[in-house]
Image (cartoon, rainbow, N blue to C red; front, side, top):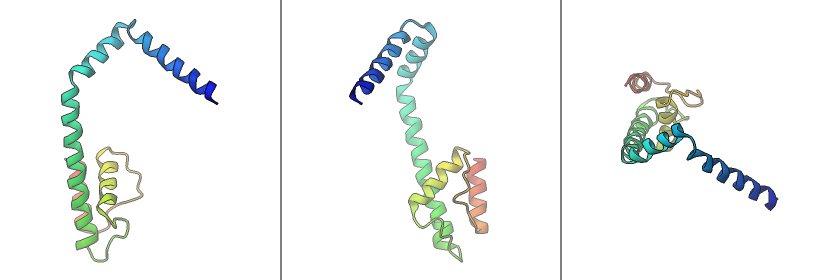
Length: 111
């Protein structure tokens, strides 16, 4: 098993060595490294938005709505709903049931 792991590592290293021979891949790496700060800002903003929207959906669906939506028993479940909704994956495992929750979800999808 150790032999196969070493072989995989050697393959990855060989592919990385090929990157410097390709002009396009070198340009992509330069762009990614030069925009490192912008990527961190983007990740931070998206993280805050997910946390904010997940918390709002938790309070709308589990704290305010009657009957309570048992699919959203915590803020983390709300954050999962926000990630799935914002990335437009839409698994359908968690969804708002109340009118206010559906309105909030529509607002999140549109903006």
